[in-house]
Length: 147
Length: 469
Image 1: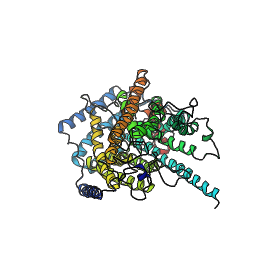
Image 2: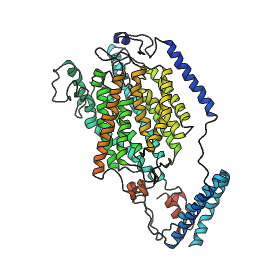
Image 3: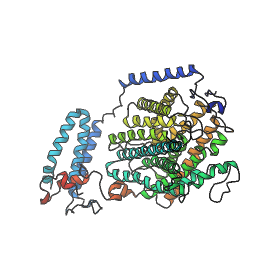
Image 4: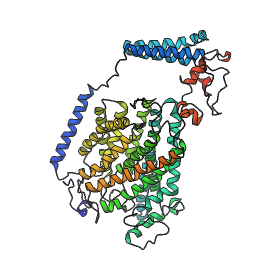
């Protein structure tokens, strides 16, 4: 089926007026317009109910496993602290080297973060935010104690 | 006004139009830079952006040295003539005679590309085509982030941006091109010629490159690697939208002495309708992806681009109502395609294959149905489904997938394609550039420095003191 209103190139190239698809078939344009309008109306309607499916809540076993893994990570770094940490190699941006590098804070933050994320999903966003703030305030002191 | 001044005004309008359209096309690159940077993780953000930035250099130089000549030299090859160059006799036939002035103006040593008061147009067309070329290569850039070697990407960008898409454009987006003259292939906004080629080239590269570490679990199920800065990604796509208005405007041909506006195929069109249709494609594309993905931000904003790409090939003749329907369909399918590709084990970090490859293929084929029967010149077949399918196949497979797969396979054989696992895990910012993208944020070194046992750092570190990082 031809959608062109022209049969020859001469006709097309010298046209003074509509040159678009279905210009000679207004009923098709009307159908397309109705279809477009329906899409627009459905879009506005659907936007009231559009929601991403939230991930399934982790069960208690999964949370327990995460906490155990985090604790094991802390114990591991206490017994075998890693001494290597990759520094910025670019001279312009390099910092003064530290005699002693420590992964404990990262491990601790990771453990708290894992636990906090799991609990946060269950207790609500507000409780989660408080937990993070508390963690941020406490972490340096806790780390000194660990050393 | 004297007749000479009037004539020069026409020249100046043409020159200015392409100049400023090309300048606005640079926003596509600003957008890709932000889009990819936002889509990467914090440890790769700078490397990702630098890699994208270098596209302007690799493709810009390669397009000057040979890409522009390829566009003008390859339209007849291999079916209606040979490759045109200094060795060609212009008197062979009328077509060659008509094409040779463009070939002569495309050599890097051509007087037409330098300051030349006798030619205001060749240079500005070079500028526009160079921006098209960079756009094509930029599409590849985002999909490969976080694990490709910079050198490998530069080689791939040159092959794609300065050769394979240029051959596709010479064949299917050129008034002398055999895909146009023999098959009636019509691709006004480069759906197949730019997006189809680059999307499928990217697919070929991804098969050899492999997924990022951690993208799939032991059972091969995909795991989300979330963009570190989704708002930046969304701003990037907004810039890309602006750039694509200029891109489509630059597809219009208006030369000194013309009494109308034409497509690159010599068929009539209007710039105003491109403005209407691009806006409708953007709007309907956003709606399609929004509904299909249930409001996923990444897919929704990509839907705008999907709509524009899917309707670009026939935007010179589509009615806006048709544009709405086609853009909606393509953008609705796009998230499904991206998810299906991910499930196949192909890690396309930005969905380039789905947005550009799928929508480019869809857009170039659908012209054969939606605009079937439009005449295109004396002796040139009217727009038809067969011509569109064959043209789309040549763009996506012959000039897209096969060169992408072949080039990346060669790079992989010489161990030049992918960074080492250690570098990938450490992040390319430190591995390649030696600097972190966010030194003042709570990144690894911030935490380590801020809590290390040093008397000099007993006071809390400020962002200023950490700025030297």
